[in-house]
Image (tube, rainbow, N blue to C red; front, side, top):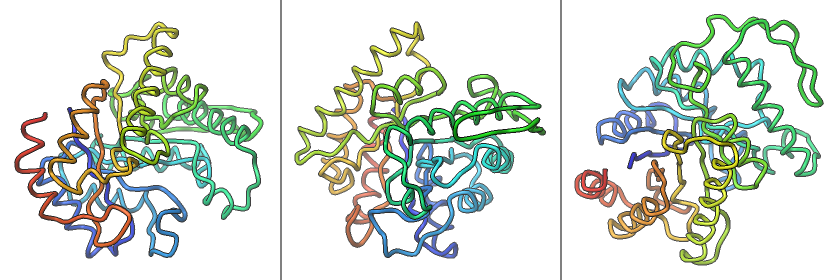
Length: 293
């Protein structure tokens, strides 16, 4: 099992920089930040951009993976975003993890869009296809329903060979059948928040069902699932994973039983959401994570 920690982009950099350093010092495998214009969970909070935040995080760390949790068509065009992705991967020395998803309703409304969900899903497919090409090829042309591109130069091009097609690793957030199929066809990994549930048991049942959907889709695609990473956002469950060491250990154990390779928690906050204490985080780092790797 690999472990990730999310640091929300709500802090001025003078406060955030020590948190990113701490995430690496604690031994987390990867660290993430939300990529939204406004996040619905904290609509009144100060909020900073994901791309410059991760560039700054890359400058104050050396080993830890750094990812968007997640980027979407709501606030990115594939051509423009390709440049930012290449820069982040270069600045981080090949540590960038590109998490992408359809995007939330709030950002969509703020950006002045009124697309029904089916159209937003279709746009996400087109976004992913074009972004994948831009991160793999050069002289890219496209004429799609949502995006066009005209002989796009993509130099310097791919900077490492970890991803599919020699590009930055692509982690696709997906729950529905079409999005899961896209994750299997285009992604190096799949990410899920499980879904909305009233109890932990109901939430874990949703997660288990999604895992079976991924298994079936991998089999249909004839793809070996051994090298396909599976990321679970533990903190969409009703119980915050860092509410106690026992809660965290139980959540990681359940995730492992369901075949997840990576779990992601959130830096505890002093108020909801993700209400918790630094003491629990320290105990988890010192005792639980070393036993469960």
